[in-house]
Length: 428
Image 1 (tube, rainbow, N blue to C red):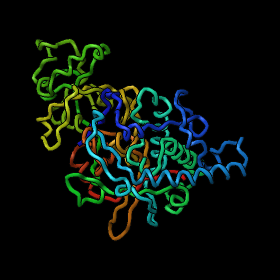
Image 2 (tube, one colour):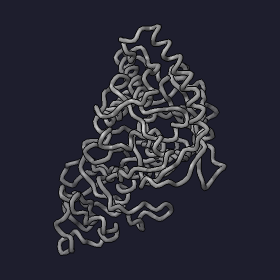
Image 3 (tube, one colour):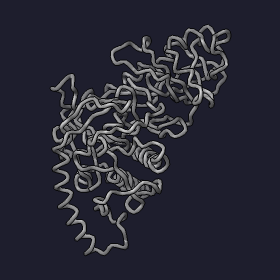
Image 4 (cartoon, rainbow, N blue to C red):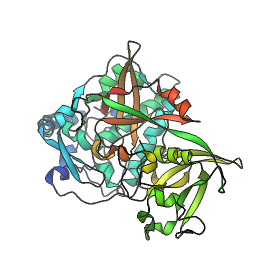
């Protein structure tokens, strides 16, 4: 159950030493430039980057000496990190429980199978995710969390370097009209650290594989005006709503009772974007994005913007949920972002939604499942999140596509696994 969780984040600082260790910083020397106030910690001065990213001012001999010393230090630090517990937090940055990182994320290798994905779509999501780091690292400090991969010595610079390297490889391979090297598991194993993710479900300690749920964008007919068929509105908040958060007082049921309609006590405070059927509204709220085909011939994507601050309750049917989302018209399917204008544009087939706070934005993930006696590998980027993932270390949501209805969606996802083995890829 997913909506793109991009409501205003609570930037409260966690005061425990363990959580303080989660803050990682990086510089312009090693990755694509970010905001100037972000600095690199002293033990990350030199990284073993691909030749395209090496500092030309460092001689070959000097770089080997520095890297050798750093590797010895890093090995000791990695052992200490792996043995330390990782504190899991919820969407309000409150401590929930701790995990032993060495039991959840461990070094591994990809099996010898082709890695499946659409090359151009993956490139798009990689570029857009990297741009989010470049543009919003100071406004959205949540993305500077490396999450549980801290226990494997992975840093935010490692994540950025992984995105950089993959973008270069894909651009070269697409320009040369060839199957990309990123689909070759041997190339992956040679150039990336492969880290296996074993599911951690506090309610089911026997679960080892990740649950792979699926989400989609549905197309729905809609009207600019209320009719007998299209009688359920989706609303947009006005610019001054940040100062007057009246909307946080009202549940979904309050909104649907007509408080924003003519004669309602809050009439005029929001803008009605469209009128749908009740089914259309629930699917828009669940998936986070909807493609509306208006009766006048216009069509557009609408994405969740801000919610009423009420938590999503697992296990409660959709119509009974109190959380309500306000929408905005957008130019593409949108994923993670701290505000509507900053959201990452994503593509189906190469995007995962997950627990950004405890796993980290921009992680490249490969899932493995067996079908017809053969192993299948699928690659994507964690570029989205949602209320069902805060916290959640045992599930990923796969963006399956754009569909006319649930029947078409259901037929498509029968080809995808319910559970899979998952791997993180980190550039060596």
